[in-house]
Amino acid sequence: MEQALFIAKADNLKYFGPEYSRLYFGQEFCERLLPDVSQLEQALDFAGEYGLGFTLVTPYVTEAGLEKVGSLLDALTETRPDSEVVFNDYGVLRMLRGRFPEFEPVMGRLLNRNKRGPRLMTVIEKLPETTVEYFRDTNLNVPALNEFYTGQGVKRVELDNLLQGIGFKLERWQGSLYLPYAYVSTTRFCLANGCDDPAKEMRIGIFPCQKECQKYTFYLRHPVMPVGLERKGNTIFFRNDRVQDDIEARGINRLVVEPEIPI
Image (spheres, rainbow, N blue to C red):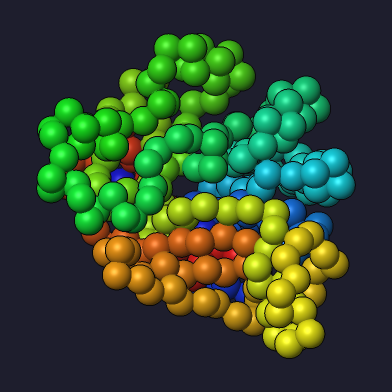
């Protein structure tokens, strides 16, 4: 089983160890947190020094974000044209296929429709077996979706470690499983914006970013939630360290380890 280290900033290269053969670097959830070219080059130098495979991770984007992703891909193609690029936005996929066909496109976990809500675990034992199977299944094996992504050159998909377990087998693709942080939901309306300014207590919207998410993490607890939630910036996560025994038989051959919430 291949293991990859996933970091969102170059400072977290400190988490590297001999168990890792690949470096994931970038940002899934916010274009404002994408690394700049110099930070990308730092990560690439590190990967080159240790002989690591390299995967650039990209978020859902606006037109401005798409331009920034393009600049990173321009730099990446000069140094590591053998890289993977995780896309979580169809505009990024179109850019990859049109301008950067040398990269291996990887479908990000934001684009699959697996059921992530932790509240499911409070009722799952009361559900019929067919319903439990539904919640453990995926849309990734739908024939039309298979045909589309295969036509786009996608051979790998990224997956969260679901609390209810993974009940499907990937038929055409290889899978990567993220540990320990699984995301529940994400939005462009960043609730961390202005969180340390009492005058902005009731303000919610898309405003100039002060990167409050780099200073604060909010821990959420509620009786209907079987696990705690962690909100960082515009995204909510839960932790799940447990890995079921049969993931390789289900088409998963890579573990993507997140030593910190990847924001």
